[in-house]
Image 1 (spheres, rainbow, N blue to C red):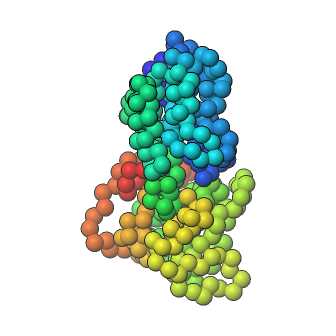
Image 2: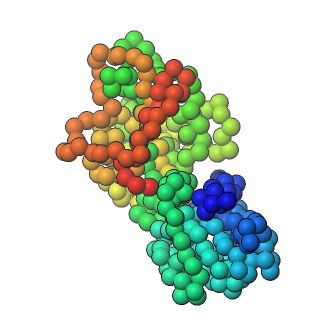
Length: 320
């Protein structure tokens, strides 16, 4: 098997920790010696063994001379657990193949340097494995390096870019609306602006899906909130409020506000990913999903897929 195929297996293992590792990233590891897998592991929970340690424990003495395939640079600092880089060195691993570096300032590049200093070969093949590893931990990467949540701007639009359809409550179909509830169920917080609050007084809860918890529900802008609203009002500068909620553990924010709030976020450079649910409708009138911007914004890694009768267009505003 190729390095890419081994890393694909490590990425698959990492997903087993999805939803239980926060605030840590999801990480997977595979140990191979003489062409045979001798150990596998993934990070399950904060304070528990990291993926490399779990794989080393599974491999035992077979780890000596093996190649370790890891989805993220091995940590180099003492946290709740000892550094994984040191454990790989002590186990006698001969080579480490990593999908991507760790943006954590306590590890960024240091883990690789420590391994190389111990005469362990370190390879970063890049390509698809790197991209998939970045996306796999996109929330963590922004949260740990920029101290703010990874922000996804989600909106529903007509084919002519309008966010309302005259005479209709909904812009998109039932399948798209269900997917939005699934997104809410897997994010840390959902936010709108006060214009949306005054117009719709939304709940912003994840409904009719298997939600193990509800996201924090935020409203940006000047109050007051409507009587009985369960939203949290955030009235300070956007960057300061995002930093505050990040310190409180919000790593991912789903922005569902109207064009005023979305434009303010984009202008401030605070949107990382765009998700447009495009309905096969021409509204002919109504507000656009974004206001005027000072300059064009080039989108990265654009993709799309059908969701029922609609089309979901996804793009990044910067590398994750």
